[in-house]
Length: 113
Length: 111
View 1: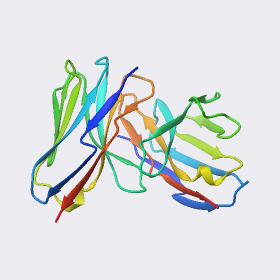
View 2: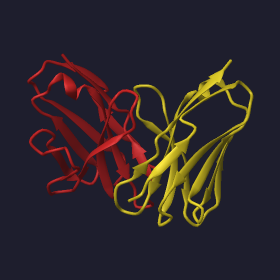
View 3: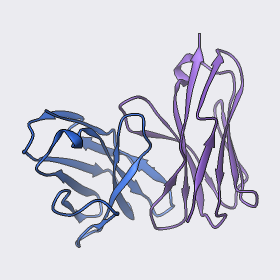
View 4: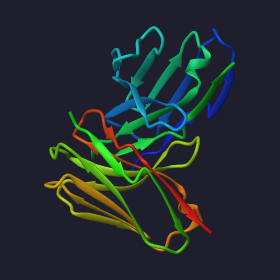
C-alpha cells in the first residue's frame, strides 16, 4: 500500500492569484494523476503527471492553467494559475502502484473569492 | 471506451441491515477493480481491490465480488452502521493507464 500526503488541505484564495498543491507519496508509485471534483460530481481527470517530462493533459485542461511537475517517483505538484471563482473545487492527487492499486491524497478544498 | 455505471445512485437503509451496491462496466479487458468510499469534502479511501484473477475479496464487514465476463462487481456491506454513510465509488483499472470511475452511490444509514 501507499500513503499520500497532500497539502494544503484547504485554502481560500483571491482571484487572479495562483496556488500550488503538493503531494508526497511514502513509496514509489508507477503513475500519478491529478483530479478535480466539483460539488456533488464525480472525479474529472486533469492530467497524468509524468516523471521528468511534461504532464499529459485531458481534453479541456491546459498546461498554462494547470502546470504540473513530477521531479521523481514520489512527489508531484499541481498549480492552479490565475484563479477565478470557477476554479473553486476539490483537487485530488492519486498514485497507481506497480501492483495496479490506486491511492489518493486527502484532497485540497479550494475556494476562490 | 470503458463506461462504468453504479446503481443505485442513492440508497437509504436502517441501521443494522445488510446491503449491496452494484458496479457495471462495459469492457471486460481490465486488470483490477477497486472500491472506494468518500466522505464529503475528503479524498478517496480504498476499501477493497479485486484482481482480475480473483472473484472476491473480504475485509471485515465488507465483501466485494467480481464477474469479469458479465462486467459486474458488487460491494456487500453487512450489519450497516451510521459510520458507513458516505459515497461509494468503484474504479476499473485497465493497466498502467488512467482509471475509469463509476458514477457513485450515496449511502445513508438511518440510526
